[in-house]
Image 1 (cartoon, rainbow, N blue to C red):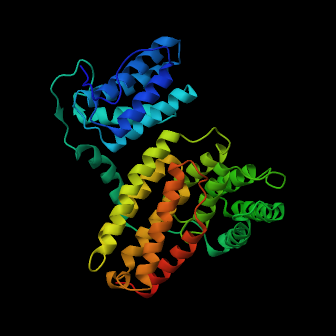
Image 2 (image 1 turned 120 degrees about the vertical axis):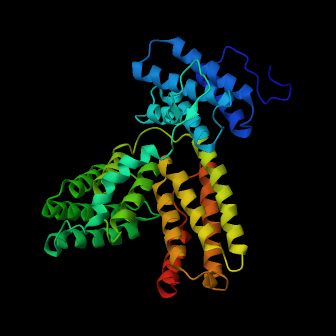
Image 3 (image 1 turned 180 degrees about the vertical axis):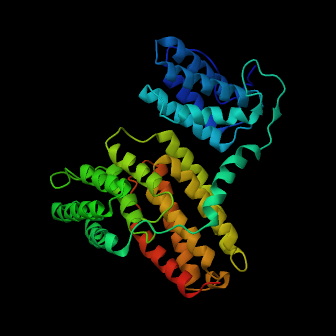
Length: 392
């Protein structure tokens, strides 16, 4: 029986399964140790599966969610942050009526660590060797590391593309923070030049990205971009400016992710629960950043770890600009002599960067616009300059 102090009781009522699940989820995010919250969520999922005839994939996904939540309730798994994030994605699936393509596999993954795989009824289980799953992928990658890879494109092939990327960067700078149609028209011209450069490269990935950008910005000359499109464009422009973008080993994968986000630019709203959970966890890493700056000299290893943790938290939530900002901070700190962060101007720049990032994270948690604070770009440039001139 739940204790009288439990934040929520598993009482069935007239509310919809989604509302019941939502109530249990919000209580569980505040008190992960409370089993009564999990009972409410399990009851809601069971009611949802019995409510109407759903697609087999949807039914299987909710069944996997029940199995995971049951394992947590029965203390076979700890209520870790990744599992709470999965529970928030289940709420999103209940809202949309269908789960996203990877949710079922992500829900089942924690259950596959047991041998045999976790199924009801659950018997005492032994965890598999955690290294066994990594051996085959590692063996497949090693041959690629043995010999240097030839460049994909010659200087002559890249000429039109590189010029187009430079023009596109200038146009984007003029567009940032404004809704002026003239600025968007110049951006569109830069994208057309990018298409020409992609044709010269003769590779499907750059052409796919250029076409996705052209389609996504088709209406910008007559209408302002949505916040979601603006965020996705910012991520695309940042990655296009990366020096090794065309030669990146995962070029096809990067382009596929960007193209998918550009195609989904007008889909619904963000999950309020995922944003709240992200902001809560990310602010803990902000505190780690500040504590690392108080060490003598500043603890650059912890600074890198905390920034990369924020990057990991933001990546699955379609927060590409924030992911990139955290990645670049970690990259810069890795090269800076810790002593340079113990005195001005390095210390002031780093602390201002942390403050600006915290304000951005707080805005995301409060469901405010997701565009990056303007000062972060300038601070990141100063950090990069410190890294170049004051390497360890």
